[in-house]
Amino acid sequence: MEENLKKYLINFCKIFLLGMSVAFLAFALMSGAEDVGFWKNLPNGLPWMILLAFVLVAFWKQVLGGVLIILFGVFTIIFFGALQFLWILFLISLPLIILGAMLAALKDV
Image (cartoon, rainbow, N blue to C red; front, side, top):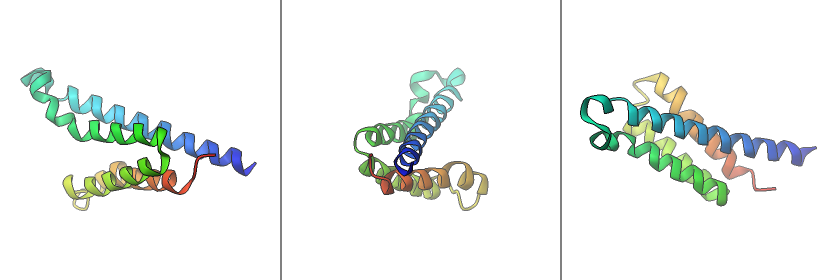
């Protein structure tokens, strides 16, 4: 029973992080693209492309990917000013840190 729960938590973390990174990437690429064009708006999506790469790393090397996602979550606190805007902290930074820590702590079954 414990191994099934562990597998479920690992898969939940990976799928949730994948969905989160794709959703934020899509939003970052589309917002503002109608004004300046897709290619000039591409730098807005760069942080989320990096997160997507870290999540994909977590699919193959779970602990390394978890640590990278934790570091990205800390980066979002600094870069996005999450301490001044608590909604950023609770909707972006903390879920990244918590889910990255879960991936790093739970070894592949």
